[in-house]
Length: 401
Image: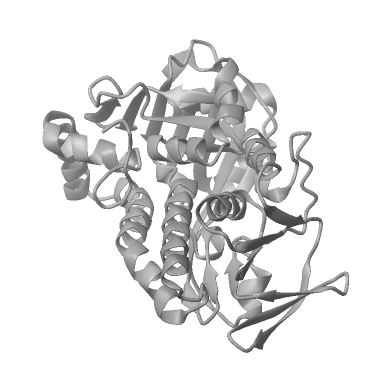
């Protein structure tokens, strides 16, 4: 029996641990530096006050690994999506009924998502070491000696690096990153609109950046507002009434504007891509491998698709007697995931650039593109399937068909 050590117990690492426990007989150890209490809502950097958009395919994977039943009461469905551009004509719309599904996706607060994953972990054979940190990692034979700060050591046949964008483990392995700073900040909060959101998600491109209004339970909305750094700081300094007024104006008074906003947090917007995702005995997952602009809400969805593909690769290798840390095996996983990763990263990077370009020709093309999208059924359907995580490029499948 081989041992797989997953470093990082956030959404990506916890999901992979559940998948591996389900699909392999390997010994699985999950190492996380924060405390992971499964009886209360977690409050860690991985499971903070932000919310996550879950594609339909993602929800189905969460159901398969035993997390969805716990999460479902706290996940708001997305039945309609509207994409618009402030001050311009044309809009793109997606509707769940047209796609033959009950919902295009869902939105859940990270704390509830974390609670569901950690609760599921209690019922599987995963050795959770938390709170615990890695001290050093040393190459040893075909694997790694993972030394923990409590003085203990783990022999890992495969090391999965899933400890976030500022991954210390990735640095220990000597893997560099390519970064793109968007010079912008995302303001994230929950807000209460004056009118019911009716399960509609809005993606609105303004002169300053993208504004997402995502439906939450209790008729709230999750707000992700991308702004230039100086303007974001000014928004953060406003009192609640003034902030709600500015948010209402930027949203074009959708949902009747906003009456109340919760605690606001700010996150610098950067794209970070690891220069390598695999090396002998080690593979990167989640934000340690790729951190994307949040505009398309695809970060965790992409990570979960990666996790499923990695678990499937390791399950096949176990049946064939191939060691989990075999470099050719890991590179085959990386190659299989390249198309989806490149497409998703390109969309997340390109949309903000496209909608902030100050060029009349580009603006006209954008308007026509939105109109064409809304009118061309085949294009619209394939885009919807991609967004739901069940399109041909994602490698996803769905019982929804």
